[in-house]
Length: 275
Length: 270
Image (cartoon, rainbow over all chains, first blue to last red; front, side, top):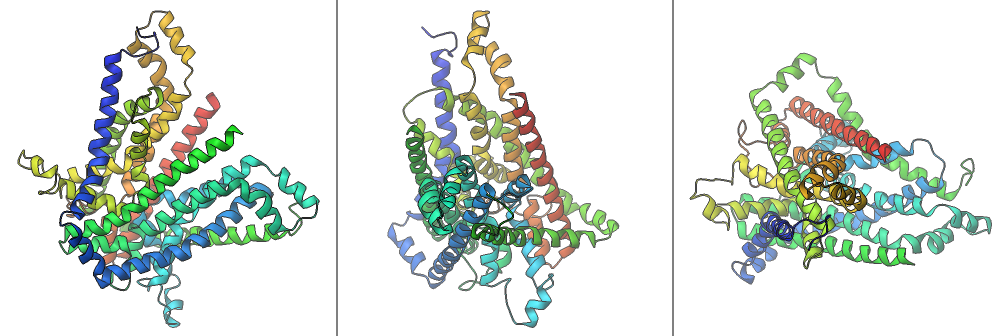
């Protein structure tokens, strides 16, 4: 007998079934299809795709961008989250809104912004060209566009964490004479490390997977300015769907790692809050 | 912590803020300047080009439809996740988060492959006359994919925090379960639903990577706004690109402000 605040069993079963079918159709199916497409020729497609020089270069380029963007964003993110909690500044709300901006702007618009800023006819275009510095359609442009879209991840993850903890422990340490590094490393860091790790993983995944913003500033020059996501598009435009799927499958790993990381940090966070 | 003292932490924070200001605000400022430099008559002419109007219609139309679909399907799923315990619940939640975590190009290729003529779904949809690949239907499917988590994720916590006592009271007073849902539960979800819808809509307007593989990308027919900007850039039509970029930013901003106001209003009520 159902309690008055429960739906009849048949309805519950139907809703659960609906949820599974909906998710299976709209999410699991596309994901499975791209993996299947990549594996349709067995290993042959993978060997062919990842043996190609252009693909190898795309992977190297993607990794290099992440290698620079993630540590940089980590430092900035920690600095900003720290300042948000410990430094008296006006306009904290504006800062939060500012950090939301990169997420709410269309990637194409992001790329276009940097063309306006650093492109040949852009604000600094003339200045850059006179010094022979290529930013747009070259590596620096890719990096800067990536920095824009990945910047907020770590800050947004750390701010609620650090703000929620309050300032007392760090202030006490300061009164006892500890230096800035010691305060951070011994007191702040142990408390924020799981959130920080999660933010870093999100940041890494985005910096390797970003498409729209990078596509605009890259010029799509194979073997030069194509990151792995852009290379997926290039292969697609070649008509080589299996190869594009193979490259995409490797990128999909990023998505899976993010999800696994989210689950683990959730578990850790719940364990922590129980103490 | 005294803000007047120049601490190392303070300096580091200052550097961080300068970085953020330069990286985020400077490009936006340049867009504003370039937009202001355009003559209003030119702005109007560009905004009313048939290709531009078509792009607005496609982007707004499909984003709206996809968001409505995601809202209608998201509410029951959120309810299921929040209220019911069943095997595979965590599995379901993980997959629902996938669109947030997956690179957009992967989503684009995946959806395109699935609905193409030789794809698992495309191969039996097309003989039925339903062509998804390279049409606006493809755009719809892609936007459903990327927007799916939004409504579910905003509504689910609300359902989880609902006070069961209200539903018990309604039941005591003789309300049927359906009536209780309609008059007690659903109204409490409305702010979250609208927030989720708006976020899915805003995301759908600006989405690029997931859409361009399966969309037809034909100007005037199946060209989304972001692609219109790309085409304008490719023909060095900076004026069009500037105006469209600014329009998109204004729309995103309006939606963002609306969401914020809604959340504030909702927070005040409780």
